[in-house]
Image 1 (cartoon, one colour):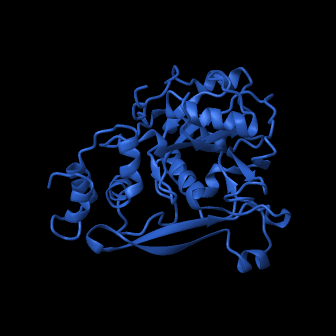
Image 2: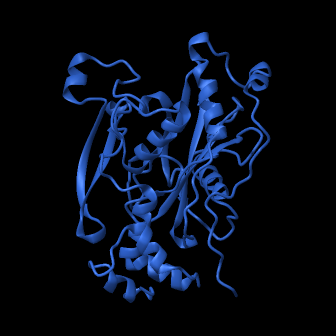
Length: 319
């Protein structure tokens, strides 16, 4: 049996243009006030977005997706569905996350992966009319060395009811998308609470990058306003995805600095992970994917003879 072909992370079903005004007239989107018209612009910005393709293939076994499911709330604000992960899970138990998971054999596109995972976890129908696609965002390197692609959809059917998989999801809730655009909480909080734990904060950690340089990475943390019932803040990959979604939707940067000034671009970060982590080498070999390691080295920014040459030769690169 031939090995599976690498997945094109940006191949997806592109629906006909979403006509927000028509959906509004049909009653599928709640009425928006004059102050809330910006959310139509957010939807249009997402629908018009085209991610920049990676300049190299990624093994299917290293691909994953998350679903960013947006809907217009009763007050006319654009909101995103979030999960509280089950305490039964072996990893990240109880964390706040987006529906998602690794690519499986039956998935033809990364959109298929995101929709399937959301259906399995929270019962969101795989229905491109009631839940049309808005955008495929740029892939992100996760801490576990998976390449995660965010898939953004818009829930138009107000009658949909969640069906939670108790083995994976304890509960779901929504959060304003604008909450990832500002350090000001989108919910009311007392001054004492705000002083004790700010709505948005971040911390940085160091890692070795190309040519033994020291790279700084920033992790963002957002409160949910539900911490009293045990809901964990939004952080890590989930926060990263939602910040990126907000930047595309609003067409500008948030009021905080998402990344350190000298941070590697995501394509370079992914290339460096491919170059420096032997697990990727194993995945390429097991899936029979030919890779131009010299090209990976150049994109990663590894200089010849500066600690990268031996790595490249170990991977079979022709330097």
